[in-house]
Amino acid sequence: MRYSGRVLITAVAALMVAGGCVSSKPPTTPTPTPAPAFNIELKADKPVYRAGEFIYITVRATQECFLSVYDISTLGEVTQIFPNRYAADNKIQGNIAYRIPAASDKFDFEVTGPPGTERVRAVCTKQNVNLFKDRQLKSDSSEIQVFPQISDKQAPFEKDLENQKNQVPSNQWTEASITFQVQ
Image (cartoon, rainbow, N blue to C red; front, side, top):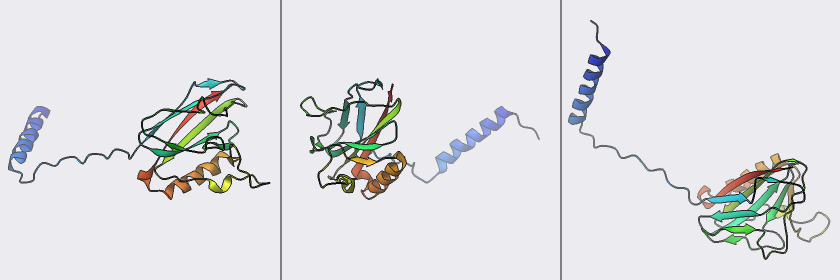
């Protein structure tokens, strides 16, 4: 016996309608996807810089949190740029844009090069967790560095950061990153 496509589709549709009328199961409501606990936006003031120019980072979190910002240079060196010795209070309010450095800060971020892609990574936590506390002392003294160097290579930093974040419940932190070009 041969069925044309139209007859078969009509028959299947009729069975689906009839089956729906007889079913004793209540219709299922899709489970909504939970919204993230909070998130963060991170922006640089422009996409391309020349060595010697100053960069400004803007950060906005959707909830009050504690912010840490790391610069990953074009060479892969990782430096904590916020908080730092001049701006130690890293608590930020929700839905307020913060410029780093602020106009009142006593420090600047100068782009140094060499040419390539530089990355800035920001992590916000609900509790004041210092993710790299053990790396914030100079090797030759107990003085806290202005901008602590976290690692001289990006890969170990990324691995260490993941390990540190995994010690904090996932709904208690968020992160964002941006890249910009250095010419």
